[in-house]
Length: 337
Ligand SMILES: [Zn+2]
Ligand SMILES: [Zn+2]
Ligand SMILES: [Zn+2]
Image (cartoon, rainbow, N blue to C red; front, top):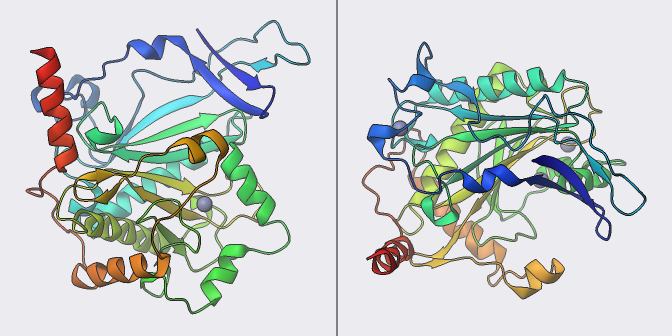
């Protein structure tokens, strides 16, 4: 059963998808991997490629739902869930790809964004990526995902509202700050002014682009390289594989107004080589985020690493998994016998 219910207090939509609870939670082995070359799902495809999600949270065929009233509203979970696989290499993160592969990945993100935006019931196309078993990724082969949803998510709504009169991102770019990680003529990477994650990074096109749809091939190439570079640097912060979440923030659909400024936010999950950043009572219970460092210090540390790792590919193979993961695996084996 799938539907989208409105939380009457917070006015936030929650996607209810009861059958997704049974999706496999174990990490697929390489030999059974659905994304490697030769898997039935990939026949006839060359990388990068996209596929429908095998366990979709949304479906284009959802029918109207019954039972609405003032307090308990719901809408059909009508939309699309897709997977984007950037490389056939089972162990290649984005930093392991070369500049051409990264550009092709960005072109594919753009294509899917534009294509899914054409459906009238799609109100937002969300491109994101989760990497690392520590943050619950179920298929080891690195990949990105797209949800095309029938409402505008709260974080995008807030960013649109903040950009109505003037663009805060253009204002950020025009300032010389000490949180720059690296830049070139088209792209700037920063640690944000008020970060939530210890090593949070934002990658921003210098031109005010509302979305990938407005980006030139050159801008996409630079954006892809910057994403690969920053991810590569994250794996070298502690010299362990950095689990992370990446999200494209942009106009919810290609035909939306141009006020919001496209940027990519990356949230690396470690705060030390053996410690995860966990959300606790203040954050989860109230949305009160705390940052236990000086953002400018963390930016300096990260910028120094980015000076060393300038060009993609930055190989991540051979970099060990974090100790926290090794402990979690040991614990699981203890319980499972
Ligand atoms: Zn694979
Ligand atoms: Zn702007
Ligand atoms: Zn954002």
